[in-house]
Image 1 (cartoon, rainbow, N blue to C red):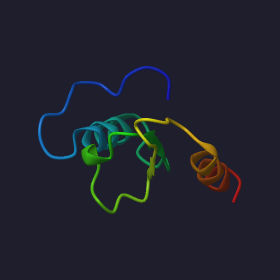
Image 2 (image 1 turned 45 degrees about the vertical axis):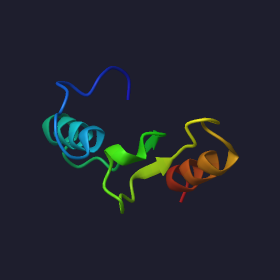
Image 3 (image 1 turned 90 degrees about the vertical axis):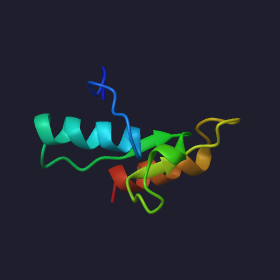
Amino acid sequence: MIGITGRAYIGQWPRYQEIKAYLAKYHPLAEWRALDDAWLEFPAECPELIRCDPNLGIQEIQLRRLEAWLNP
């Protein structure tokens, strides 16, 4: 995605909620993945989250997961 998801969400799992609100408004049928190091801002069992290490960023394992999703 290029840009921002919209208004900040205050509450449980803010990044997840912002993404879901954006998709509901603009792309309701879209499949999605989030590369993020703020895993506490997503539900514990969020299959769309590709979790990155906050100290290392995106590494080979995350790229492989993203590639597997993009090229099933």
